[in-house]
Length: 123
View 1 (cartoon, rainbow, N blue to C red):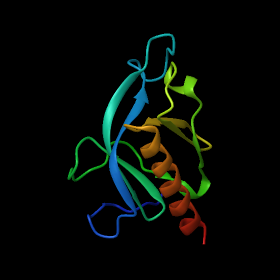
View 2: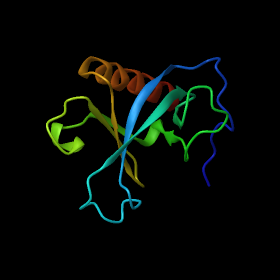
View 3: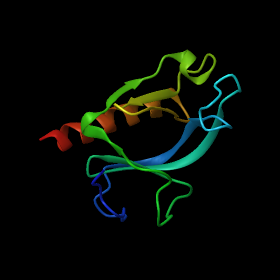
């Protein structure tokens, strides 16, 4: 059971913007295939990271990531499957999510914003 906000309105959003989510064509069954990057509009709100297919969508894609129990870090360049310094990684007990920002500077801003939201959620 995961209790999280049922919806994300535009008010009280801590941080938002476009990131790419690393996935695999066959639901992580075979990592021998090259990763597939999916565009997601991401919203940090209330201690959670929500991922949407498009900005303004009513329902998030998948379950939100609870930040208070997550490890948040700039990912090593090989996490993207090559030499890419735009990635960040969120690790929870259940999974690891690799996200890619448009630039290294934006990646650093996302890491900072996620850490701030995590500290607020823990208080």
